[in-house]
Length: 233
Image (tube, rainbow, N blue to C red; front, side, top):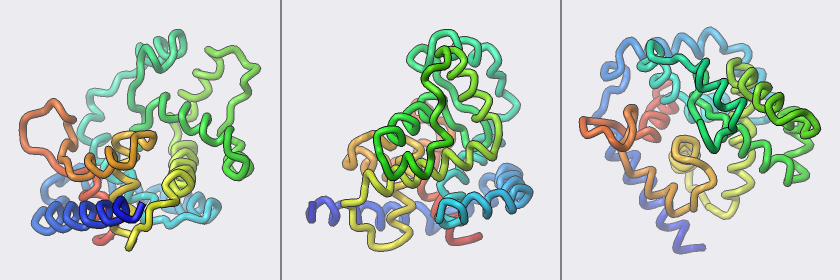
């Protein structure tokens, strides 16, 4: 574990230093960056209320999803999920999975959070409201998830559940500072928190934002943008 901690520290520090030192993200993303800041300002009271209730830092939690707000702004004209929603209700996330809302959460992400909360006594006490009644027809359960994901109130609750799960799941990692922790958590949010620690570390060094791994043009580091927001706002 000591060796792993050293690897985490080294990769995270170098990733952030080299990724954020020369890039002016507000200029680069221009109107999208302004949109993201305005959205957070418009919902500032709710964001603060949620963070206080779950005992998490406002800046840290919003920094995790800040790149998603940029992505939402970039692709907002292309979002039409009604057909996908119907397919999910009928067939589940194993057949169709897609991003919803400002924080770009997927039904499968919501399902994973529910599963992890239900099997942890402490998390279940704090986040029991996220658990959907399993006695309901499966299609009804899926419909409830979709309805929740369309509101920033519920997405904030899911975000804080994600943070709590990661704090429990990765408690053996000795982060030296907030930058390292945010780099890891933001990457886990972006690529999937159920991946192996070493895989999340590797992903933190890659630049596939905002168009994804298949795009061949210039792209940027998700976690570097999160850290930029944390230190400049």
